[in-house]
Length: 287
Image 1 (cartoon, one colour):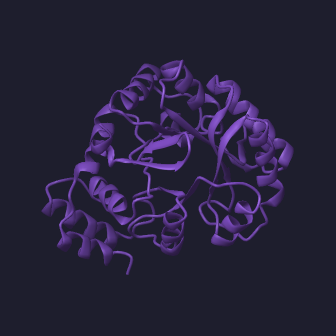
Image 2 (image 1 turned 180 degrees about the vertical axis):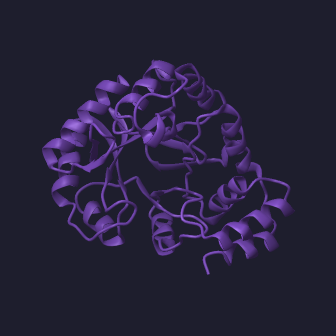
């Protein structure tokens, strides 16, 4: 099954991830806030994720908030052996659905405990520290924040640490404090500012997890992608995911969906072979 999911990568002892994972964010209500319209359907999607062999589920307690983690627990607990749940801390939600950055070290520790409780776990497989502003990194120091999470790792509440929306300099700073197993940044065909970071993380056996595989495309870029997809008789989403898997062996995907049909399409992207002429056309999208 792992071959059908793009194979696996192992960024740390005890952590083997299928390269096609699942992002659970879309299971919440509109704007990632409140409960889903159809709770039974959301539970069924999560169970289908495990059935197809995916071992990498990305979530956060601020999805909903709490809603998505509670759905994961309802659908999958007790969790199958080999399933790795990756969560994020660094924000909370306002009562109006607003996203509120929340990175004080003590609040980060509280968020970890919230995730543990709502997922029904004694230890979290991977916790990503979410930094940056919206979808762009900034140059802020992460020493206090990452140090707080490293303390919880030493206590056994977190097994592995990751980063989200960070620069290469911030990765350096984090690595001076504790091992990093993953970097989760905005990256896709049209947004390739992190090409050097993808190369670096591959060399250092750090998983690179791009989010928004179709985010930020201009109309012309979308048209080029659509033309390649039509030529290959598949969807633009599948082409974009297949390109990312081919881009570097350390890339792991977390496409999100609230339907089992779309989940199957995402998994099928791992088996899509992109001919060289298609790759050449796709590589021109970033300009």
